[in-house]
Image 1 (cartoon, rainbow, N blue to C red):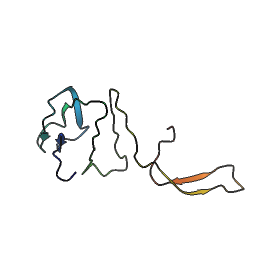
Image 2 (cartoon, rainbow, N blue to C red):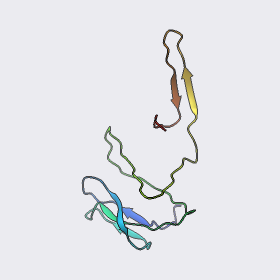
Image 3 (cartoon, rainbow, N blue to C red):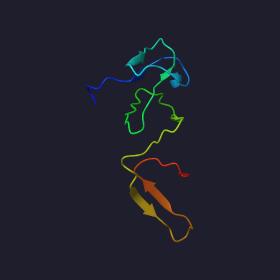
Image 4 (cartoon, one colour):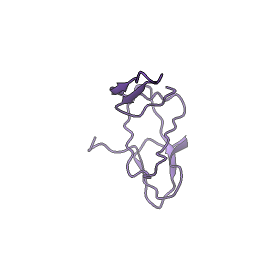
Length: 107
């Protein structure tokens, strides 16, 4: 992907939520610089298309960040988490499971 042209690139320095919005814009390459808006027009997609989402220079706080997808987007993990360790002490009715990546417990 190093030679691929981004469809959307937003590196706005404005504090707060960033991302794509409705209505959609053209699918021509589009970028927003540091002095621009934190949001930009979304893209039209077709079932079966594959995109790479690259997140770089996000705010390094203890809260992390949230990604929200609308419409009928289907997001999947190419490499599911694997079990790194598991322990079940006999004195406690609990199990400790350590996975290779963070997992939403309700998923």
